[in-house]
Image (tube, rainbow, N blue to C red; front, side):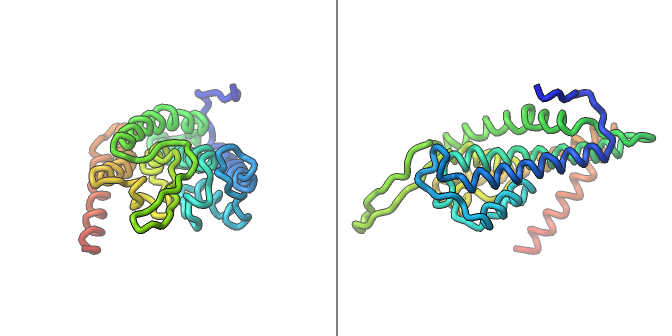
Length: 251
């Protein structure tokens, strides 16, 4: 429908420009959505996000940094979380994988500056990798007690007689791609330490597994592309060694 030829073979400048164009459009759209949040459905009565915070958040999520200077449950409505931030969790992760695959093609090809089609790489990464894995992960997280709803915040009376507002939302679906895409951040200010986002020890272990799944698969992909799986194993061993040194240093 977009007129993209999946068999196109872009030169590296075209591939790079495609990455930058998508990122620029994504920043502007995400910024705009935050600014008009009050007019959107499922805004939960929240106002538009202030300009500095909206710009910082847009740039952060598009670049896969996902640094949050706000409390998610008190600043973002359900549509903003699911239709804005979670979408960028998919796109930013897919861009990273696509660029990594283009780099691998650069290692395997000679006498050419063609790296494949960025748009085909982006769509295939989203549709064939991120979406199926996220669907399975979200269902498992849901079974583990992670919240998933579109309800209004609920006010409850505590044991001491006070009142507390409990905010639900599409948490499990966002948590799945957040971990798979190593996006960081989270639905709540406390991220996965919040009991609605990380309700048990085995759920936390699953989230760590999801964080490592794609990064540890990339060396295997490199080995297949270069036709020598030992190179992928060597890179994986280096990654594991660096991890072991880091863990040893902090313990």
